[in-house]
Image (cartoon, rainbow, N blue to C red; front, side, top):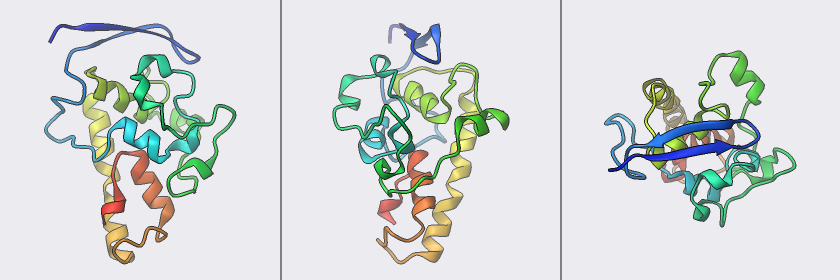
Length: 168
């Protein structure tokens, strides 16, 4: 695949350049197998709809056709499970979880990874993604099968990390 250069100018990044070196949605690390695509996540409702409202030009237009977004504020009602399961970006920064090339956090990294970017932060982000899966065990242990109102915060948190708890 020929490298494709992407130039970003949005509210959080100016003149940031990265390269797509893999086909979209292909050639993921062997330990990284998300249940959902970024498009599916946006359509279901993640991050209170506030995420990604000023950077649509970076990603495929079809990701946003049915996306649940709110330009004005974080609105938990837009989340699939209708609850807030996110910490503010300030908390993520304070804890050192933000990679400088992805100032919006994990989901921005995932969107860019899905598009075909590979970067030095991939291994760390994949480890973080794998660590979140422990919440699936809690849902399986404490919830009846297909009871989607059981543990909605954990379910939304899993969805925010591309795990589909609807299946369990």
